[in-house]
Image 1 (cartoon, rainbow, N blue to C red):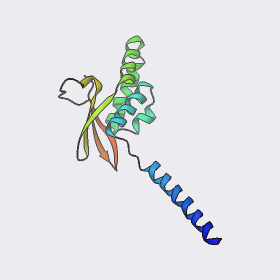
Image 2 (cartoon, rainbow, N blue to C red):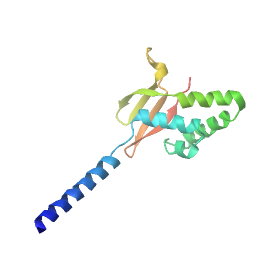
Image 3 (cartoon, one colour):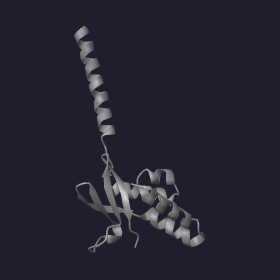
Image 4 (cartoon, helix red, strand yellow):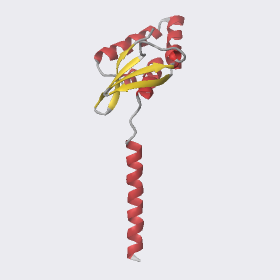
Length: 131
């Protein structure tokens, strides 16, 4: 009887370990990071947006955009554009990724919307180019 309960305990421990491994092992793709940043910016959530960028310069860019969104009707339209942004593909070259939006589909874009850098295993936004 003791052998059976030991097997059950080992099975339960293995299942918990697998769940933790699968849940914690998911790093966001460059597209997911770009989409999450745009959503955070459109919702004026700088705390979330700032966790997704490389440096102070990009944090300041986010803060400037949030301030612009507060500028009446024009600002609300800009916020809506960010909310609707959809990254659809990225080109990864080592620790750098160029992310392109759905608006670029059907044409060959020259400039990516975002350039991300991998820092400590996570993609962070380095530059943003809004045409």
